[in-house]
Image 1 (cartoon, one colour):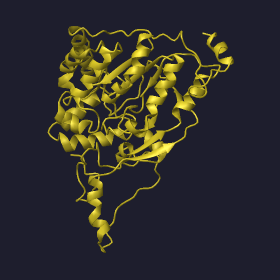
Image 2: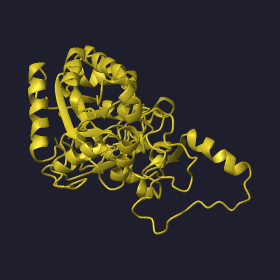
Image 3: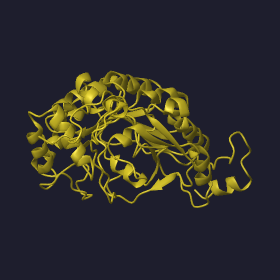
Image 4: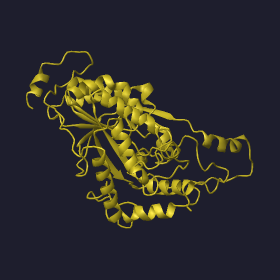
Length: 379
């Protein structure tokens, strides 16, 4: 079994209610290590420590960003441009491949990632600037590639709503990936964009088991709420697919066919999937989680994960980073494809239409400067 991440604090909780991990795992850029040592004096501070660990509050760090459009050239991603209104994610999914990005902020990919959320409060205005640049082409932008744009803090800050308003105004095509039922708040904008063939939404459904959901993705929407979001999006005319991701052998892998069937019944029209990815600090975090919650099968799970990753916890090779490699990966692929075909889920996606793009005004509600139509004529 993986050792406790608190070997010097045996009284610290093994599980934090509502959090994916209690472990402030060091990030890979740290140059020193820290250890807690009892000085023998005792006192209120020591007594309060276990309680504080048991109920960590979420801290929102407001940030004004300079650039909001992120670019990638990864051949295994279906988009080149993305917008992430937040850094970190309160959903607390233990498997999240984005956890290591908190290391760039000198924060832990563990508990910090899900309790210290960076909010890019000026994202909508910076997006207006980005979409007005002469070199911008209205290729689809992905919303939520490294964080969930509809995580709990969005209810109050509404940054994602502001981003959508800019994209809607500009006629800019986009795709959204979320596991939050909160996306239905923006059905007015999404339905209008769907009518112009400018949006595709993927709702991630990792499990239908509420008990597994509570420990795997503690602050994400419950499975039934995600299915309800699929149904609401479909009724509004939005092309919605189900994202069965990540598939973890012997954990949620037995549910593949059931998830596909439930999503299709709710109104999903296509299916996407990936297998578990464990880059950098995610590997020790997931191993610790596995040892705590599934000690009886931890070795089997990791053996199958490594079988799909060339004998390692993770393989970043673009050829099989998302889907894995080897017999187990091929079996999962066959099950997903056959299960999707059985319930009528399509393998291809509609092409989004950027022909109506028009550079947005610099200020909401203001006039579009005269040079903006000239930019639109380039496409």
